[in-house]
Image 1 (tube, rainbow over the protein chains, first blue to last red):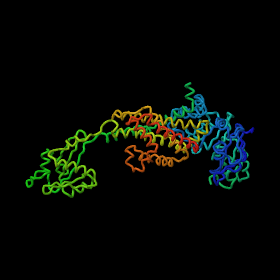
Image 2: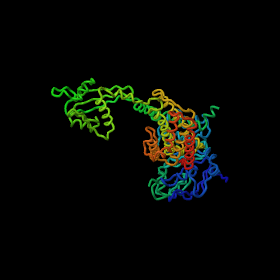
Image 3: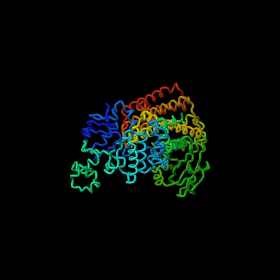
Image 4: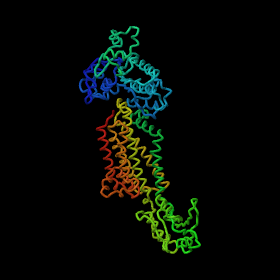
Length: 254
Length: 381
């Protein structure tokens, strides 16, 4: 199937035993678009991302990545996707450089691109540091660097800044904003942080109980809740929790 | 060419695993140094016969010192005739020390200590001595537990010594032919077993645990999200383990050769082939074991449940023929038993390919079987 979307999710369902994790989601992501998927724990966002990533199969519905399904195209699609998980423990006693070289070898990429990525994530000084000696922020920068080694057409980031301090978070955002400026990569980001979605993404999808509650640009979504007793000057202070509360009547972390 | 190799997945995976291994001091200690220390310790303990020192309580009267009222003590006159030295310990015990020299089985030193019955019973219960002597009406009486083999041995030695004129143990020794030729010593039995056990433990922990830990830490999931060939990942893990096991076994053999003169009497090529087959068997089992779980605690349990019984039953430290007869045929089917037996026959019985072909085939088949089954149910994330 040929489609204009980079990622096309059509009426996808997924259940685990008695739990319906995803219930009929439709989503279209265009080239160069940065999309945030927001939702509380258990909303189904990780399952949705895992299906897009190709490690879970939908029970019903279809997912097209660059017009192709995962079946029969895995080797091709893996070359085009970058992934960063919330927390990945890389081999502790490898250096930053050795870790990059290892992952680069999976794509058949040489040293030059590793040097570029090292520069991109500002870790030149940590080139010879063992992974075990990196801070949480540095590890996430390394993970991000690894996800960008192959110049991915699609970048999937699962809560990349959860647990990081504000400075480390801003460093990650700076790297992703540079990537966004390049316009070559589409990104799906799952996050709990409204500010993160606002900083990085042009499109926000809010999901709960396996369904999309709302999707649109940040301004669209904020416009939706202007009916709430919130003064315009306070709009910038609106948090994801406010938005979520307005949609569901409960708090994000309930 | 070099650039191409260094950029290849398999090369980078092997290098990553190798670096991880050699940068971990604990792995090097437990994988290489500890087996060597164990073989040295056990080799020394069981190869060189130490001198035996036996404490004997003498009660009733003080037979060890010449008494003005009693000059007819059999024991005293025996000890004086044999020039047993007189000593007084810091605890106040009077003792006579008599050493029977023996350059084959090691010297035996008897220390006869004078004490009262009550003290003798306390020391007997503590295991400090095994036999108590008493002398009544010119007869030496022995008090010991007839179920205690050490006490029986001391009784036999003492009674023979007392009943002869002079120290006759030396003469008795001439009838004993201790076997000290290479291949019949405990160290010769131990080293091949330790090498086989090292391979099993190294594969179980180095392959199984590494996979489970990487799955638990989501590294596997991260890796398979790339175009990495899954077979390369496992191949690299196994290759590094086999290389490590070669180093470990080589060093262990080198130390055994230098310290104890251990040699390989059979075919070295057959031994190496068997060694590789054993590695394949345990690597296959390790992959099967690690195919599903993502919990290191479960992995721990699985590895122990599989390796501990083999370690105990497969005759690594002592022959499995000490186990009940009905269990022997089952024990012989364990991969560790098969590998240890095969290695022993190459090391000490002079076995070659003719004798080792069957264990090589069976161990390789076990490896392939478990590897295939493991891959069928393997969970990458």
